[in-house]
Amino acid sequence: MAAKEFDIPALPTYIEIPEINEGIMEGDGPFKSSEEFQDPLGFPGEKVDNWQELAIEKMGELKSKYRSVQVFLDSCVKCGACTDKCHYFLGSSDPKNMPVARQDLFRSVYRRHFTFAGKYFPKLVGAKELDDKMLDDWYNYFHQCSQCRRCSVFCPYGIDTAEISMAAREVLDVVGVGQKYCNQILGKAITVGNNLGLPEPALKDTLLDLEEEIEEETGIAVKYPLDVKGSEILLITPSADFFAEPHIDGLIGYGKVFHQDGVSWTMSSYASEGANFGMFIGSYDVMRRAALRIRKAALDLEVSRVMVGECGHAWRVAYSFWNTLTGVGAGASDEFGLKLQNQLDSRYPQPQHIIEYTHDLIQRDKLKFDKSENDDRTVTFHDSCNVARATNMGGIPNGQFILPREVIKAVCNNYVDMERSTIMESTFCCGGGGGLLTDDLMEIRIKGAMPRMQALKEVEKTNGVDTLVAICAICKSQFSKVLPKFDFDPYMIVSAHQLVSEAIIMDKPQTDDSASEEAEEVTE
Amino acid sequence: MADILGAEVDEEGFLVNLGDWTEEIAVEMAKGDEIELSEEHWDVINFLRGYFEEYQIAPAVRVLTKAIGKQFGKEKGNSKYLYSLFPYGPGKQGCRFAGLPKPTGCI
Figure 1 (cartoon, one colour):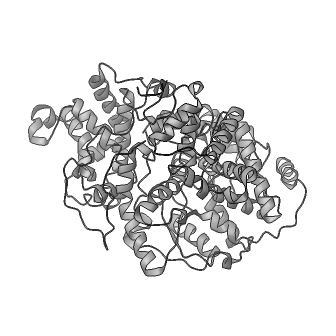
Figure 2 (spheres, chains in turn red, blue; figure 1 turned 30 degrees about the vertical axis):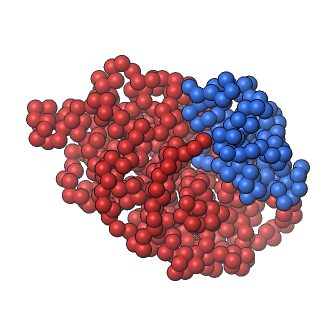
Figure 3 (cartoon, helix red, strand yellow; figure 1 turned 90 degrees about the vertical axis):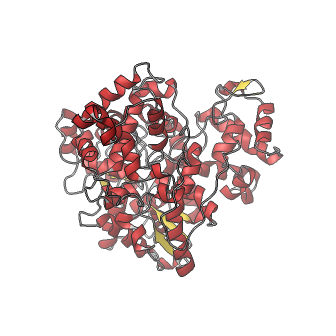
């Protein structure tokens, strides 16, 4: 189908604040969800008649339930520190993509209905009514926010636009104005067990195919176990790892590391998804329904460790929410959550990131590498926003920046970082996060990728960087689409564990069916 | 809602009722993308339809490239070849022509 024509931003030598173009990103927003996709999540199938009343009621509920939302709405002093920090503003020049302006779409309605001044003197305090135009603006501009939280790093009050964006999307869903991409995916995640809707037979065959391929290539029988009861580790990875490129080469890498370590591990066909789009739409309830599949799988498979593959927001949900949602980690109080807490081995981090696992093995000299296998590459690392700004790794300050880099440097000789103000806590989003990775949002995805592409272009010119590493399924897919728009090779984006896979020396003596033998040992 | 040769399609051009698919519809969809379907295209489309019939889902990219490589020669068993046939991606464009639902997720 013919896509809408738009200008692809030029890459400047350094990022400048663009001259503003009011309304340039106005529009209808992404495709709307229909009853078919709204219904399974418990949302109305279309915009309801009393939508205004319902929306205000929901806003009131959210402001009481999440104190953070109210604090963020009350405390902005319009200092302007955030204005030039959003990749979507920098790439699109639409002033409504300044974080403060995006927040104000929601804040102005909050003021009108929930503050004294806004109720009686709306014009004096910028309070506005929630009318059709405002709701349309919400839908459009809150789907031009990837909830990356870069702006919040620079806000002197720590206001988190992502939370406001999540709240706005939740209100939209409740009145029947949902986004097709996220809600269709969530329906599959909570019924089939993964975002793709990949049923068990297809998953099983895909994994068998992968085993065959690795054995053909390396002569080593690396296994991809599915639903093996009594395994030590349950791996929860984004389903894109089974399905897409370059993701699958990362999955190959995980398997090789598990093989070398000799640990017993499994995936689950019931909970075959790390990504949890419930966070993107701001619905705690839907996020919980998706996460509970993981708890059930962990209990049924009697595993003692739960591990997360390369997926940005999966790690945020796992790191920050799984404890109370599911009992993976401390804090759950319900019967099954407590049961799982007792079942999991407290000597290991629960949950643990695959990078933490590989890093630990490297630290303990359990893995050997031939780094020269990656000598044809000069590598840089893209910090994925949810990992960078919402989680930690390794239990040390800044571990989420240190560990992935140490893993990469352990397996390749040529590594350089991009410009400091575009990495680590200040990383620029890939442009496709937060539920925006859909073709109908291609314009904002490409424009929003500009700041990341600019930094990448600089290290390409200066250091000859030809490989971009990410540990997030969305980043990987987004980059393979947008890289060619900025004159890069789309195949330069790889998984961290693809580099591991290429350098790892597979010298473990081969045994027959070692996984199931060890699995039995664990259960004894 | 839009239609192609009388068969209803969604806003992204995918068939609403998968049973409506005919070869003519595939040809018409390809025409809309300025592609003339060659024998190589049909090899992929037929594989996609066969796989879908068995598993009710499109194949993973690696499964597809491997199968195409096995059947039609190693030089064709890679995603670069498939992208040369389906510039919008074998998953998305290929599935649409083949009358399969759109693959969803972080892909």
